[in-house]
Length: 292
Ligand code: GUN
Image (tube, rainbow, N blue to C red; front, side, top):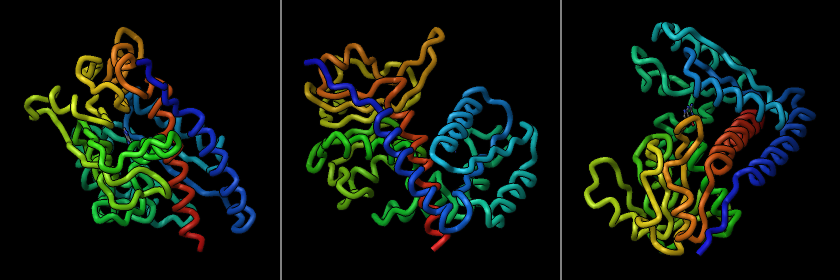
């Protein structure tokens, strides 16, 4: 079998276009564009690239994107004050604090301080709780993008076995919550899967992965899943972005898995593009709901 390649770019481009049209309408009605402020602490090279990608995407989609750069040695209290001032600023619709934060910062306290109505990352405990209860408001962007990808490709997961490898708060946990929902977080999107979450302490990982009709891999280690481990005909979503010998590779060994699965996302060009597009969508939603 040769897998269909699930590219993120066309869906990201369509999302950007839709956001642009709605942002234009909002600008006509309210006299202002949706506004996203990203807070970038320190000089982590990967974070700088991600934030630049977000700025460029905002520009394409008619969203006013700002970046607040703070030094790596910023204090916890200074960072909290920054978040509080963004919460209080009526011109700001969405707030994003780029992760990871430096070691001396209590990340949880910072994310908890973001106004849940401006939490376009969906990391605030209120938004996590709403998602867990099946009434999502802001959904973390990477799993939301994967949901869109599955919907656009009409990949139905109801009653199927979805295996999520990785239990991060950013991807693995919200992904599992989304796939198990009775009713998808997006109209016509995937839902009602039987979900298994695997992690570093899971014994017989390969045996569980081999049972997956839908496999989502988000562990941040290069090529941990290969073609011998996946079920023939399965759909494989690779969330990893790892640099190996100067080249970007996923958590999945694309070449061997593509001969076994029915569909697979590429790295780069798959999930990554969608993550940024969903951030635009969440920011627009924040702006629209604040301007009602
Ligand atoms: N770092 C890696 N992924 C993300 C993300 O989705 N949001 C934020 N804020 N930081 C990240």
